[in-house]
Length: 384
Image (cartoon, rainbow, N blue to C red; front, side, top):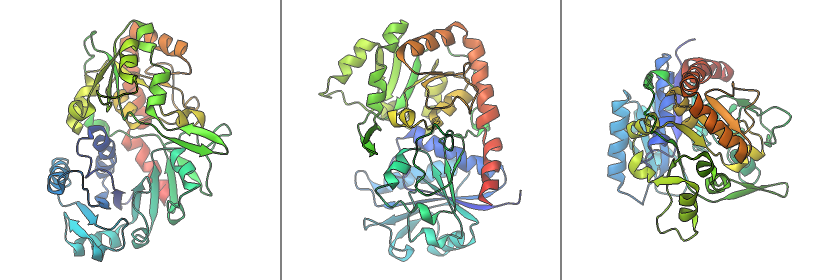
């Protein structure tokens, strides 16, 4: 394939330096496309952050991009108004305004993560592609809010089940092309099996929230997801660990309930505060126990998280609630799905009882089905 000039656009990295997993997920696209020989540029556009020193956030952003080999290939565009109006009204860091205009004008396409870049900026690109990382959430939200979906030429979604009869995601007038979360395998060298004392873990945002579709309430709460399976560790006779932003002063009673269920809680802002720490945390784990947001399950989206992909490529088995993956990835060894508490407990026992085989198959699944070298070329072909 010819060398393409691709701009990757977001508005979520600069103000979240402690999100090691967040940064790691987007790094897969940067490094994956770069390794394929394409000219890749990161464009961060956002309102000036107010909750932390901007200079500190910018320095962290620049340091990480440089360490990944992207010095001079990024721009941070800051606007002080609630919405982007024009580049002329913005503060630009990383490259000169003239250079940024040249990058945008020469780009073959923009890959716009989660519709974070909006009009009129979109109109400066000759071709726009949306990368939907929250299947169901984006489409249901688009029923009530203008996300500029019609200003994109191609619509990708990590909802692998989109297009099948049992998937209930509204199309909102667009043709959605499924693709799996990707991993740039060279960033994840094969690891030795962890010590037998290692525990099943996961990393999550402990939050509330719901959406509505045709009179139906759809939960987007990871709290709902995990509290539904809160007794799994106790029933398995094992301790599980969750890196979740749950305040120790939380008045809801969640902390003692998690403790009684067999969960150990750690602070993600301390444990996985940068991409390297995030990777170390995963490789020290026995595997992942993943409870997706209920909306992913209820709409049969076929969602698999970028975090689970990282566990798999590290040779760490993933045990997760089924979101509709049955027809899309090999399940049962390495990646094991459940639909109720009994199946979850059985899955954990099965992984523990034959760990070496599950570990090998986890990495093989990632390398065969999620590797950037396999997924990205087909995505680029669909963008033509």
